[in-house]
Structure formats: C-alpha cells, structure tokens
Length: 327
Image 1 (tube, rainbow, N blue to C red):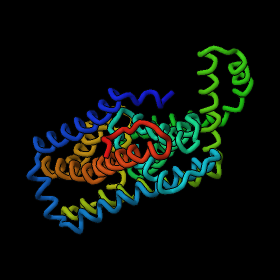
Image 2: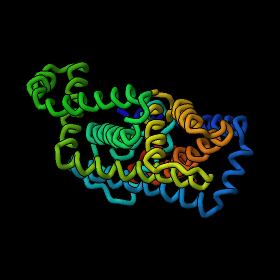
Image 3: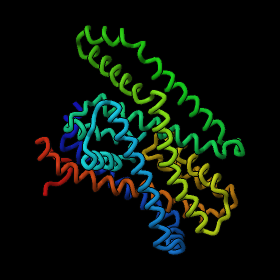
Image 4: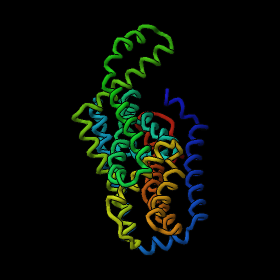
C-alpha cells in the first residue's frame, strides 16, 4: 500500500522537493534582505540564536511526547529511539501542503507493527491538536485585533465541527460492518476510512484531549516565546501576549492556506503585523526570516538528517528499500 509508493522516482521527487524548498527560501531570503538578517544574528549573538534553537527543540520534544501518547492510546508502544527518529524524519516533509508529507512516518512505523489506520489517525490527531493550541494562543490578541477574528473564529468553528464528528463516529459502526461485508475495493476503502475515524476518535476522549492540548500549548508557546525573545533582542518593548498572538496567527494563516509549510502566507502575515506595530519593513522582514529559519527550517534540516538515518537503518530491521543513499 503506502510502502509501494516509495519507488525510486518517488524517493527522488521527495528529496528534490526538500532541496527546491530550501533553495527557494534561501533565494527569497537573499532577495528580501540577507544583510538585515545577518545583522540581526550578530545583534542577538550566538547565545541568543542558541536559545531560539533550544526553544524550537523543546517544541519538537514536547510534540514527540504527545506522539508517543497518541500511539500508546492506539495500543502501540514503539521504543523511544526509533520512534523519535521516525517522528523527526517526518519534519523533512513539513514543507508539503498541509504537512501531508509527514504521513511518510506511517511507512516506517509499519515495520514496528503499527497499522496504517493507526499511524494516520495519530497524524490527524496531531494536526488537530496543533490547530487547537495555535488557536488558543491566537486568542490572546484576537479581542484587540478585529481583523483576526474571522480567521480565528472560522478555525474555532472548524475545530468544533471536527470534534463533534469524532464524538459521533460510533454511529458509523453499522455502516462499517456493511462496508466490510460488501467486498470490493470501494467497500474496503470505506471500511478503512471508518477504522481511521474510530482510531482518531479514541485519541479525543476528554482525558487524553486535555493532556494533548496542554502539551501542544506548551510546545507552540515555546516557539512563540523564542519569537518574543528575538523581538526583545531587537530592542522592541512589546508585550509577550502580543508576540504570542502574532506568531500564532501567522502559523494559523499558514496552516489554512495549505501552501507548502505555509510558505509565503505565514511570512506575509507576520511582516504585516510587525509593520502595523510600527516596525520598519526591513526589520519586520529580517525578524520574520530569522524566526522561520530557527523554527521551520531547523525542523526541516533535522528531519532530512533523521530521514536518511531511519532509511539506512530500515533494511536491517525490515529488509526494505532505503529512501536515502546506501553507505
């Protein structure tokens, strides 16, 4: 199934998409003001940049903890080290629309006995948890920024509808039974979709939903704090709640745009909000590029390394084909 998609052509296309995304963003950075970014890096110093990267790492670590909780909830206990490598490997494809490329984790998790419906349900639950956390952070400033209310309100409505759909998913049990009994490819596909929904629903019971939401808020709050720290390092006296709002709203706009990694839409939102707060265009662009380099692109770089590592280790574990070059 998903495993068969990893043909040599697909593997090359995946790696090429990563390279092109990096080169494209690097080109945009150079065109938009690399001198300003370099000056900002010097202004913050190695310690400041190191702290921003550390806060991003805290984000990844907390999200991995949540991932393990979701897999455990679905009845799968994957050892921490291989699971962490597989999880981080998904970051390599963060720049795909809606982060859909992170579903590559399902292929590697299959080697550890995790079915596709379970891993995809965990991925869906993770995306929904991220959405909930970012909306909550965006609410910190939505009241004083009327222009953000349609976006925040619309996403809140979407979240409520998704949670309601999952809560009512048990009513699909009779349909699931009929689809299983019907035979044929269409019936099998429908049955698998029902199973995916049942698995996702189990990840959104009140107890685990509260836990994953708390972890998600802390995770995305860490990156928002890095953004606030950077702005303070630039000499800007801005409230932390405002910085959290700007970062969260930018991520939210990037997510609903379904552009690869939110590229362009997230940056435009952040630059616009910073300029609206009285910053020059040059400083707003520099701040936006630097926070994206230390969050999004730091994750992509770690993901590319992990993707090669987990792909090379795969033959020994499962006799499968590698995704990266052979040693």
